[in-house]
Image (cartoon, rainbow, N blue to C red):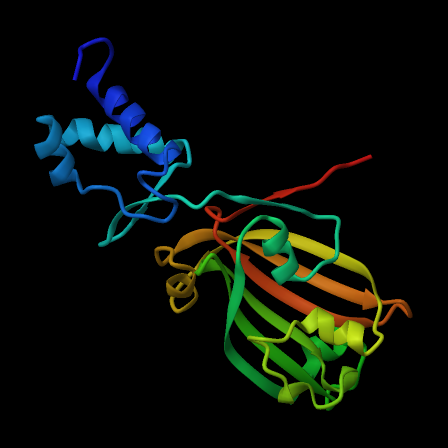
Length: 236
């Protein structure tokens, strides 16, 4: 490498060019530290400094015990709209899919009877999904709704069926989504499902959605890695 400026910056620029030219595609693993050391005859410290530069720029991410990968571009989500996760991912130019991890019926109990203004003995439905974008973990969603909101709610395949499309089919109009954003640390199994290290800080978004009668019909708690999404809000 020519000695015009620090070698670690030259290496960082070289890797960035390869990313931009799609020689290192999004989500792919870049050469290991040893491979870069051997290819360019440079020190381990130089390689690590170059990688740190690109991690700070959001172009690379380390996965413990696996290597260094080209980061998926972060999606920007406004905090002022109601839309299904699948449509949101699709509108962001990515291919949505999801894996249903759990569905079950349970009594509302104290917490959810208060959220939905129903009796604690009434039945609610839980839909727990891993949302994917281009086949990679995007979000973990725990969605709760009163079971009676749609007939035979537990009979649907939510890997193929959109919950919001189902509401629309049943003429349930969503009018307001009250959102609350937190930063929390996740442990396994949530961390493993999101493909982040155990104890990592992630976004947790609470959505409380009401219908045209002002009745709460959905409460969703979602976990997002900072690598996959940023949240924006415009105040007027």
